[in-house]
Length: 391
Ligand SMILES: NC(=O)c1ccc[n+]([C@@H]2O[C@H](COP(=O)([O-])OP(=O)(O)OC[C@H]3O[C@@H](n4cnc5c(N)ncnc54)[C@H](O)[C@@H]3O)[C@@H](O)[C@H]2O)c1
Ligand SMILES: O=C(O)[C@H](O)COP(=O)(O)O
Image (cartoon, rainbow, N blue to C red):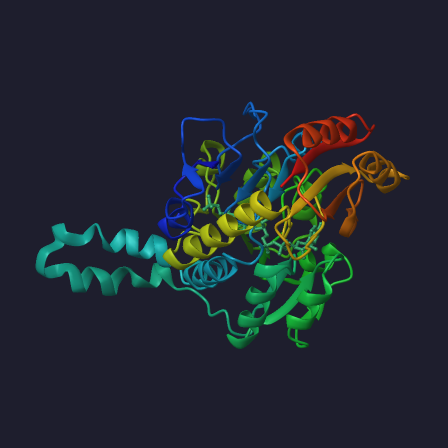
């Protein structure tokens, strides 16, 4: 039996894939083999030794200590694209709502009951204070052209916007999906200088932390609206307040409110709703659960953030999986260890991603318990190996 524990509200569609499988306990009392999580911060979490994999039902993995997990032999998955449509729809909604002053206007209208029969007259007298502008013909900058950025860029074109985008690391897949009418910015400063609206769709990493900062504000077109449905830390809050005060930034729409940002003027706070639709929560939960179960049952890896995709059809005899550093002679040392156990290799695969690699070897028969323990011990003692499983 395998145990999967969960954090956060994971959609029932995903949980039932565990509950209905007699090989699994969901949130059992024993040590977990796998963890399903959304946004819970796991940076201070003590991972039990039993944990082999974590699946993030969502896109951002900045809440998970990836390097620590990798060193401990834990594979970390996410669900690329599974919530992209939900985020895109909310970004488009906020583009329009912010340029029409919708939230402040509605907030004001909700206070009018005391005017009784005069409400209509009060409305007509005051509505000039909420005059907005149309997004058609305005310039939108999209920073990051992954699953979400491409959808936003293409649909903004369809709404009549002029779109310029910046992503020096765009994938071939994303480039295929992007409309040819999206203009390419060669440097992020072009986005700051030219756009009426900028929307951020990049992951939070050491390199992107405070990507939008005092120097960006100095280059910005006056009155720009910034939409941040990626992560709060992408924007330097120590200089944002002044940029909002001076009108350099006209509005800051953020899915990540905090006390500091809430105290600034012209902030539109959204309570982290980007992925909060029934459809997106189901997509993420089902995809994360399937990836986690597949890894636990077969060793196959799809959509891990710390290892490459590695897939071999599972024959069901015996499979050896080894997670190790991407250094010379690892496969040689692993097969040498196997040679002491009179077993033939039926199939094998080795793939690497940056400094880490993963090797799967299918054996032509099932080893005894004693042989399994001996083989595991031998391979675990190889320098650079962080996880060994026999499935
Ligand atoms: N608000 C929400 O609920 C919500 C939901 C989903 C995702 N997100 C956030 O949005 C982020 C993006 O999601 P996604 O699904 O599009 O991810 P993705 O991995 O598909 O795309 C990210 C893109 O950013 C690009 N990129 C990385 N660094 C860059 C840089 N310095 N400049 C320009 N481009 C850069 C990458 O090349 C990639 O194309 C996630 O990492 C997450 O933090 C938030
Ligand atoms: O990165 C993500 O996928 C989003 O921020 C969604 O987070 P959530 O799963 O907590 O809604």
